[in-house]
Image (cartoon, rainbow, N blue to C red; front, side):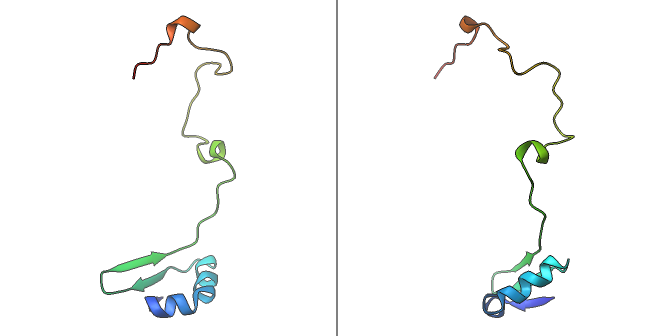
Length: 73
């Protein structure tokens, strides 16, 4: 669906409902075109990274001794 900025702002609830149903709304203005789509929210940061981050060690314990970590500014 293609619309302009004014109509998009005026009928935002209608376009939001269409995006929820899977449609992509194209909003055109003088400078370009914007796509409005719906996405499913992530439950947590760990859930968002599931399958992308691999842990090879136990991260609940310190990995360096107290004097081994010296940050520099």
